Amino acid sequence: MHITSPQFKQNAKAALADEQLQRSLTHVRKNFIDKRAKAAAALPEFEALRDNAAAIKNHVLENLDAYLEIFESNVISNGGKVHWAATAGDARGLILDICRKAGARTVTKGKSMISEEIGLNEFLENAGIEPVETDLGEYIIQLRGESPSHIIAPAVHVNMDQVRDDFRRVHTHLPPDREMSEPESLLKEARGILRDRFIKADVGITGANFLVAETGTTIIVTNEGNGDLTQTLPRVHVVIASIEKIVPTLEDMSQIMRVLARSATGQEMSVYTTLSSGPRRKGDPDGPDEFHVVLLDNGRSDMLGTEFQDMLRCIRCGACMNHCPVYHAIGGHAYGWVYPGPMGSVLTPQFIGVEKGGQLPNASTFCGRCEEVCPMRIPLPKLMRHWREQEFSGHLTPPAQRRNLKAWAWLAKRPKLYHVATRLAARGLWLLGGRNRRTGFLPFAGAWTRHRDMPTPEGSTFLAQWRKHTGAGGNAS
Image (tube, rainbow, N blue to C red):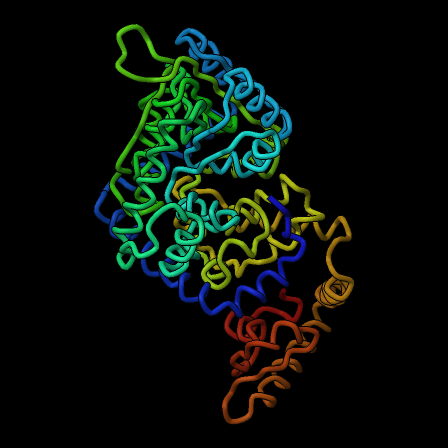
């Protein structure tokens, strides 16, 4: 997909002015937050499960090479093949080669953010192979020529009227006067269209929520069942997954599963949990003749042993964006690449470079809600701060911002002068507040106050009060 992360501010401004988008985003705030809270509260051991899940992934990341080799060995023992892809280009090439050997003209796809990351659909189309998204949300945005705006609800930005218009525009072989007033009628229509595609597909491509080392099993969780049809009906099943999706055992997977759905959609578990361990065996009633797993690195091994390693625990539940006030305001497309919200603000600079993605770690209030709800206890605000530090040290921040920070640092290193300056500033802002006790002016912060005001200070500064109550000297800081 086209990268627009460097234009984040312009994207955000357009999103804030989009009335239809703003109406659609209310569903994120209403539907996800309360459901997650109720699901977590109903499970007394939820917090302990979060600790266990994080510990499992930490152990895996410390021994990732060993578990990947065990996984590969067991996939081969099951009759499958494992392909290693260092880059997105390598992964695309491997998948295209598999499709061409199968003589594929049509490929059905389950929902996969990794396929979005590597730009698979456009690549296959350019090679003369038609990819068909089978997740309802993904199918809708494919018709619209858009990318997902949410990792678990890809069409959350679209309303029913828009879906109806898109179906009329594309499904021209159906009667123009057909019933389309209810969501059920739209769902039935999509199901009928996709049923034919499932039957005709030569290759099915899915992602993977987990890769189990001890059994060579890939696992997907869905609520529609499209993933099962994608991987059992075609002659060839291709799994595309990133290397950090590995877990040691089925027991480990089951523990993480207990926090996944609760964190994502507020369900105890997804409707379908599908385990695949190789191609069809003798006596199996269905299944593919070939089973391929493409393991993607694409910069992830570079995160190992760094301050960003914690991000590799992510299980793509979407809880961070579901609770993020910035995402609530602008949606997913404003982030300008595959991964939106707080998780995207950490991953995007890693994958496309801080030069292109550096605006995203700054798109945070640092309220901490993302870290509070993350089932894998990823310290997302801390990781975003690391990117801010790299952006600053690389001289990528705006000159005005750098000058202001240098001025503040100079002042902060001189405590007596700092205390005098803060007292004068607090008094000055108090006077500016007038009777309303609010001000829309802050020196050197015009961009921040252009759209908001703030309460004015009341009383003495914190440092002055601290010295008064503790009896500390004037050099307290």
